[in-house]
Length: 472
Ligand code: NAD
Image (cartoon, rainbow, N blue to C red; front, side, top):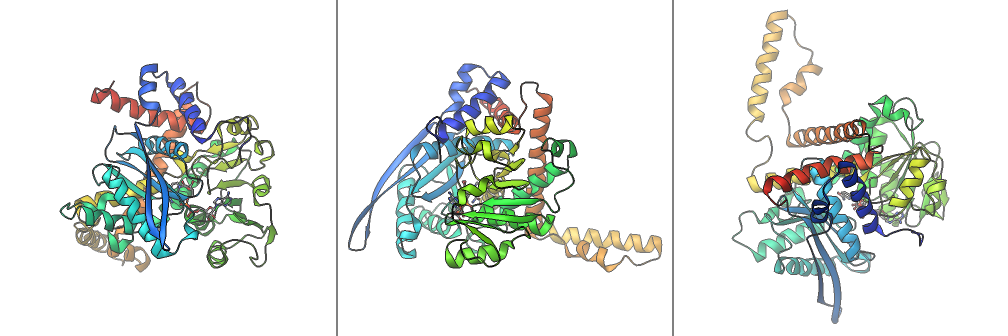
């Protein structure tokens, strides 16, 4: 969906980086050192399938190793190519820096339409891709750690981890070679929901600052706001679910590959997700109006537009028609650089991808830490926390002569499960990242949008790290 006057995704990311580097007055030699990917590999490999050979093509790009391991998802989609993987790898560097996750940026992709293959075939292809990545040093717990992205999930991560472990049986940390694994295979609770949950935390923090909300022309809190989500996969569904269930927003539209559904009364995220699982689309969802040209619904009336599908969805072709005053980039790169200028001129506010969807890599970081420490979070401290809380409750009861009500006592005496710690860590990270971003914007006369502020905030940390390591 790009007009010929626009640069591609990689061009957009480079332009966004350049704008932040100019605002920070980063010296040109450092800009040169940081801007491009440090290495990119193209892997072509045959797999014996259906009585013959099929050749597949994949890529892995490493943007920056200023922190190790490098980290970034693996995408399975027919549209994957080298420039897309490079663009996503550089976004990962700045995303990790923004949320203080000590990883460099990387990204991978395999040009494949998963639905064209059976599960057994996909397993064979994924395992072979893992061997190729391992052969070339593009996977490993201390080196390069993939995660799920579009078209991949826990299943693929489990195959990759198992294949890596078979290749390196004496590596005690082998399971940490990928994140986003099933909980029973070294994964961590809440990773599946993490990206959408992080989107929710950022949006909630944005609405906690009335002066920020005022820039959109919206007023009041999140409750009742009309939201349209594009892409109802992992990120889109979980974002919608948390916004509806915890904030009371109205999900008035869902855009999928086969079209869009609209309902003023609001759609139930779980029901839409189930319909999508059963039918592979949204068409035929009961009680909603179907629009065959799904892309046109990006421009429909709503308060908040959440593109959660793919890059380059809002371009010069439709930027002038976008009605939503607030655009929340749950996907990577959904708004092109050129379109962003048009949107900002029209007074729209964009919460940028590197901030908004950083919840995934944040919880992936927790998973990796748990894998390399070989212990789940809270295992050592939970019993002590409960004992201390019991003492406090007893002291309050002794001092007041009254029992503490059960509703207040119960959570204190239950103690924190691992999932509670992860959710709290994620919420804290996303709130801090939003605050740091807005403060950077407010403090810098050269910056007047949140994307440049997020890039600048992250770039400052990367530059500092290059300088301290003596790389510059
Ligand atoms: P997914 O494969 O689970 O879901 C993507 C959904 O978008 C699918 O339902 C697909 O049918 C739909 N879709 C694709 N192209 C579309 C189009 N043109 N119009 C309408 N619908 C379309 O993928 P995901 O993991 O949810 O990733 C979505 C986006 O979020 C990607 O940009 C990805 O890079 C980004 N992201 C994902 C994670 C994560 O943890 N999964 C983390 C950070 C960023």
